Image (cartoon, rainbow, N blue to C red; front, top):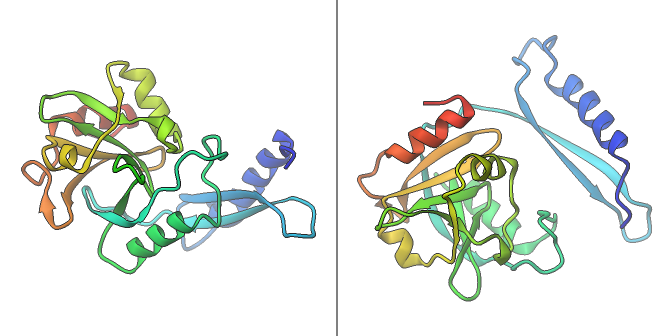
Amino acid sequence: MPVPAQIEIESLLVESARSAFGKHKSDGDGDGILRIEWSRAAAGPPELRVVPRALGPEPDSWLAAISAATHPGPGKRRNTKFVDVEAYDFAREEVRKSELDEVLLFDDEGHLVEGVRSNLILVTDSGRLVTPDLSLGAVEGLGLELVLESRPQIAMARLTRDDLASARELMSINIVRGIVPIVELDGRPIAKGRSGPWARRLGSLFGST
């Protein structure tokens, strides 16, 4: 599809944010998330759609599990999280129907790609700071981009379940939430089951401690 004009996206963003999360709202403080989609029906022209969601409270740390879905890989998505991708839809439903905060998606070769809600950073057993190789198909979020620019020692890596099991730290990263330590995976604690030093250091990039 042709790319929409930037001014159209920006105008929709501003108007929708004011309408959904404006300070005049008696039931909110102006915080929220807008999901803007560029799509079309089978016989219609492309159109921009916006879905607002209030930014509710988030825990200081997350519980996660490995998704039963297999990540679709890079395909032709070009760093874009397409809608109507079965693996994403399935993984979001796993979160919705559980007490989990995130589920992690692996590809068909057993490599960690991303979380359904976030990018991931891991401190390996040897102390290396790594993120899943973006060539595997993860969407590079703005939060990850910020951290990679600020911490060039973070390496791309092809990570397995064994790497997660032996990790010193596992962190979710998202531009809205910043750095959130994942302290439990599949019911088992990551490291000591609490936030580690790298979560606090990277969290400072987003104004958190």
